[in-house]
Length: 284
Image 1: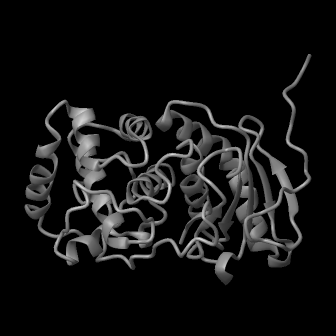
Image 2: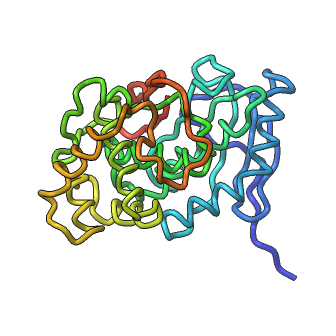
């Protein structure tokens, strides 16, 4: 009987990690090869083992959201940004599988679901096929994918509260050409929460956004999904957002498929750092 080619244990060139890459294993279905920085010892190794066990679930769920299968990827768990609680975020070189399939994720001692969520944040961007990167639209979509597939384990990265606190500026009719602005990303997070509350799940939203492309607005997404004029998107969304008692997390309309939503106060508003190259995408 023939078997599909399995990933070699030889590590790829990582976006930033330069230490020793200890091979942990390759997931049997998705062929996600998992590595760890051995200098971190048992806690990080446990994160890597847990990610290996969870990788096929994450990949299958991501494929279901985007409606297309992805390619094999490699992932290393290490102290990204010197952090070991997940707050270092995640990183890869580009929003495709060809040059973006070497993924770095921050270790999160004792909370491996955060590692899985960070993995999905980057994997979802690979599934964007080069579209949406560097825009608040793509950033919001990747964070929503991470929330849905990672059981909202990155609730402390929330940005919608920051958007609300700044007076709810309009990033529905215009796309912000950066993934570094917590305010425009926060608008996107709240808008996607609203669309899901209207009955449009992520597996309808994501393919539509990819099809519309990098320069598209959330208003265009609204029109594509609903068939209504895009001019209606902002006033209807803004009215709905203003009718809420308070926006304290990234799912203010509370109707999404994400589980374990944050119930506390405004989150810390962590966001991506400046990218280290024109292509590199990173979540922090």
